[in-house]
Every structure is written in structure tokens, then in C-alpha cells.
Length: 228
Image (tube, rainbow, N blue to C red; front, side, top):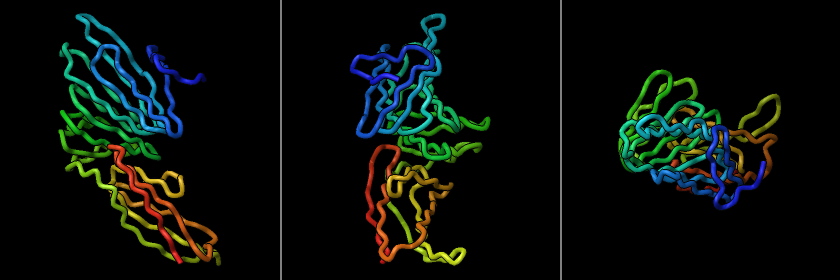
């Protein structure tokens, strides 16, 4: 694995780019059709690059983890295709701006700023229009699109419980289902309602934790929570 440099190209099926901490690469498609902006801690891989008859271009990129923002102009050739593959499904675009965020357990949040995106999983396709968002979970069909909120709100409460004679603190919280969450830098798994929980054992006399909520559009908010 080599360190990426300005001017490097991803031009072969299987080529991959990983972004680390504080690294946000920008990729430009050589056809001029669009750009891909990667967030930190993101992996992007080339799945398909084909040029068919009549200069039809088929591009498929894979994002197994992390967050990417894409700007894709309308194609000159109507037969051309551009797709993003995540572990839970495929998003097909044609002249749009949108973001994809892959969470733990492959749950994928989608936010569309311009145009429309078709998400497909489990033999079901859902069209997500401009100003809408949805998510897709592993082995499930895409959710029904709702209004794009870019909302970083966190609703939470602490519980003190005893398991096997050990006292522990449990954080139960809820965010927008499309959002990603970390607790003390550990990624959390959210359900269809955006609910998650995390335990700390044994319970300290004074508990502090940092929760970071990130929307598919990259907006973040940091919460410093304390239980005394």
C-alpha cells in the first residue's frame, strides 16, 4: 500500500483509496462528469470502469466504510451510468449532488441536495428526490424518503443498573436515523429509529463521555455528557 499524492489516478478495477484522520481527498473524473469528496476514515474502491459502444461510459464505485459527497452533472450520452455500491445496496445517479454515509453494520444514510438518486436493495428501488433523505439497513429494502433535515440533535438519558452484582452506567440515546454516532471515538450501531445504547462498567464515581453526531452532509456536533 502506497501513500497517495496529488495527481495519482484510480483507473483500474480494484484500485482503492483510504483516507485517514484529518484526510479529505477530492477526486475528479477525467470525463469531467463530476467530483467525489471523501471524508476522513473512508474507503473508496473502483468496481467497474467500462466504455461501451457509442461512447457509453459505465462507472461504479464502492464505499464499504465512511462518507463521500458526489457532484455529478447530467450525462451527454443518455446510456451512461454512474453508481455507488455500499454493503447494503446500490445508488444510481444522473446529474445530482448527494452524500452517502456508511455506518457500522453497513447501515447507509443518504442525503440528496440536487437532482435525484435511486437506491436499490433487496430487489426494491426507491427514488430519493432533491431535499430528501433515507437510509438502508443490511438485508432490508431502502426506507421511505423523508425531508432532509441535516439535524444533529441528540436525545439521551443515563440509567444505573446492576448486572451480576456489578453496577454499570448505560447511555440510551436517539439521533436522526441517517446520522453516524461515536461515543468516546467508538462508532455506535443505531436502529431504524436512530436509537443506540452503550454501557460503561464498572461504573466510575464520576462519568464523562464525548458523543459526536455526524449527518450524511458532514455536519457534526459534539456533546460532552456527564453523570455524577
